Image (tube, rainbow, N blue to C red; front, side, top):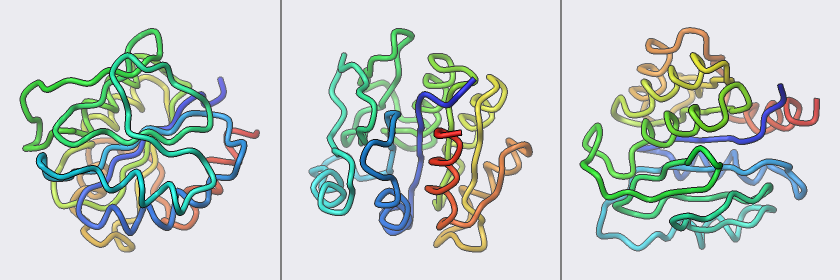
Length: 188
């Protein structure tokens, strides 16, 4: 089955990592991309404006009950978990923090794994906690594709290292190779 959606999680150092990766996704990229970055709850989401200037694809803050549109990059809003529903719409939740985080990467990855099963690609980037490790394992157990930024290239290696331990079947890759590999997988 081909990939129909991509989820990405990042924390400390994530803005720099995403700045290298997301602009590599070309116009016409045929699937939605959902991103969780740990940001403080009281902050405005400057990520959307920042990445809208850098990326070829439309970039927006996810809204509750919004249907996913191919070729769009969705960022989780501050202080809300981002979930994917079974009908492949987005949902927002203010449930308790997970791994001291809201939004939590595990929540996005686990709900996206339920919605897309083997048609999901998930990527864990740099970060200073263990969020995303269980979610990546859920993606791989559902038959999806797991990728981890090479910890040697991460600004903070804790999160990719935890993801590799939780999901040994995930592919470890250099940051600059992630966008081309995604594109090749989806076109192939």
